[in-house]
Length: 330
Image (tube, rainbow, N blue to C red; front, side, top):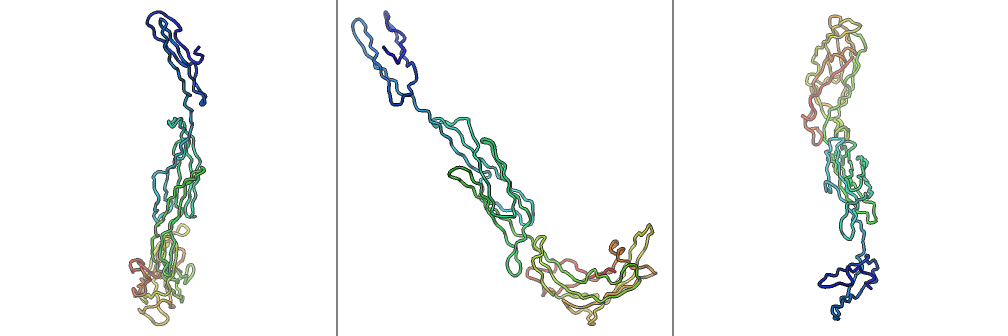
């Protein structure tokens, strides 16, 4: 009797409590166990039906988690800088559940990162179990991109994709922008630094072809050259003195003299972008005008250059060109 249940007492005298419990867990989902318990007291029978349902099935599932921090879809870098860095945390893991109850058991889910641009370096650091991983995004250079006839700076853009390597392949996308580069202008005078004499000479002159251009720069790159802006040397023909001291072979030598520049076409103050000028120098007190010494000491004559503001490139002002000079070495 009661093969599937344990009964605390099968007989007795007086008032008693009968305790009944299943002998084992019913793991047969297709078989509900039933048993009739019959109690006879002074010839009167009472029946109790015992029912043991099947134990609930243990269901194991894994919940998948995938997120980034900060939870952003875009980021902008400064276009005038290089080596700027953005770090993005990546959570990619699964957590175990038993009958929909979370368990303290995790496993990492692999993920990958892809970039559409070559001006970024992108590296991946995977996290263990449910710990955060990392994507490190870094600019390789400043932004020197441009467009149009006047080389206008532009932003450049790309996309970083972080994808979880599971069947559904969920993806987080971050739109990366690098801002415009900084524009600057530089006056370039071909003929500056012309060797007109040589080493250890007292006097010399040389005709120099003077070509003037204005270069447009975006950050560290020349992007356009404007030909023949009009300039003039207001002190053309004026004699400039120079002096300097240097040590050669342990001996201190002093240099002094004067230099002057004339225009072979007889111009003294007219505007020009291409012309030929004559550079002259003469040493004083038997001090030789030496190329090496002048370069070291900076002792050489200079003439200021003026630029015609009506011939400047778009976006350029006189203040952008700074202080400009014409000079020569021996």
